[in-house]
Image (cartoon, rainbow, N blue to C red; front, side, top):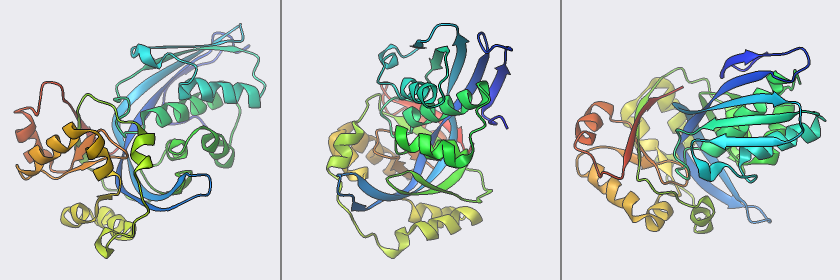
Length: 297
């Protein structure tokens, strides 16, 4: 079964010339806590994640040669270290695909923003190739690929709107939340190193009102007041200390009664007060900041 993220799919009998175009959505962390550390240094976490409508687009065309070529409107991403290339290489090697790939990445999700763009791109590449080459991969097989590529990849492979994430981020439990939420994403125009933020992270027991279960129930009931009270990000202070502009933007919003939270390891903020936020954001935080209107996707 083709992924619902696929916009178009054109197959040729001998594969060469076949083409697929797929969406690659962003995410925000409504809850993120560091609850331990593995012997290899990776952090053990738990998180509630929401998929949002801010998205990149990926187009893959099958070629007769064996190479992988990546082109993008963001030239700095045209590298063999890009997760799109790594995902394509992994699929080609594991399933012995004797064709080359021409991959075009239209980037809309800010890089290094905590919105999961790189992980989403990897997941969408896997889903695209699964359909393009009729691999018929099931959820278990997809998750094994995702785990080999990165922590957030399995969330995007699950194609869930909401999910509870645990372990290193590879364990995904989709949540049956039918509510839909509107947000503004506010990005300072600067990237933050995920590695640098996590290097400062320490396991922390949160207060009762910050529990993931309470937030899940609040989301199911669309209890806005309880949602705001339960939203939590253990990495926020670390991100703000690395990126002072982030702290400045949050203070600007808070002083105007706008609830805002850092997503992931930063550097983006998201709001839940859409009507009031729209009025405030029209005045603009700074010419260097970008604001995206988005919603649950």
